[in-house]
Image 1 (cartoon, helix red, strand yellow):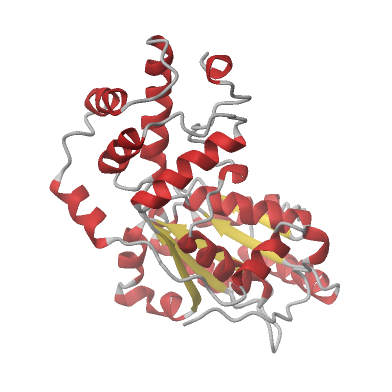
Image 2 (spheres, rainbow, N blue to C red):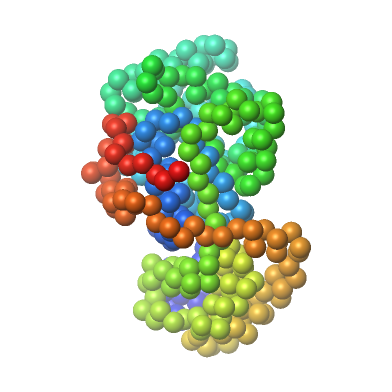
Length: 318
């Protein structure tokens, strides 16, 4: 309802994971490069972790778009409250492999043949699991077994496990050590800095068609950062409702008073001790990887980025 008033073509602060709105901080760029490296290099299991609302799912959707544009087969599991049988059913359905049998051995044989056919044609297959911290230990073990499908040189199925920091804690359990040992690439998303928060807001407004890049006053941005603690999802909630309130007041600039009002409404002005500790413990990655800009540019130009080759020329820093 406020779009016309502020000169916007669309709502800039929706919380759905739209890859167009992915803001490329150095930390996000590093995570993207690591994901691309692990997938292209057929490394097997890749681990992506980060606090709630720091952009993991949006990042995964960008990777999914890139993979599909390059004709890679993908399976995306976001409902992690599933059994091992349901895991295989979802995997086979998403990959488009017909299989009426419920026998695990038959499913694995069909999957292996299908993966070998794709591999011989230089094509990729990737399983992406979001909210993986909610997977049962049994399902996690089945995912480990899937990485046994391999040639003498490469893994046939690449697996991305994405989840909250609790996922890392879960994988430290002794009975999951074999799965933990198969993780070859690790990356994470982090909260935004104050400067990144300012850029994040400006970029989302630009994509949404704003001609006025200063819809939010500097004081408003500082208030947003203080209450959101750099979490993009919370930043979106604050900005969205502040724009609504600003529109209701018929004002053209969001002030800190608008932000404080929204923060109070959502009780963001009452931080818990756990939230404060996590916000302090997490910091943004400040370095950009060597050759990162080249990799990211190619990711946005699918015709020039062959994911099926498996011959990567890019190595991330350890």
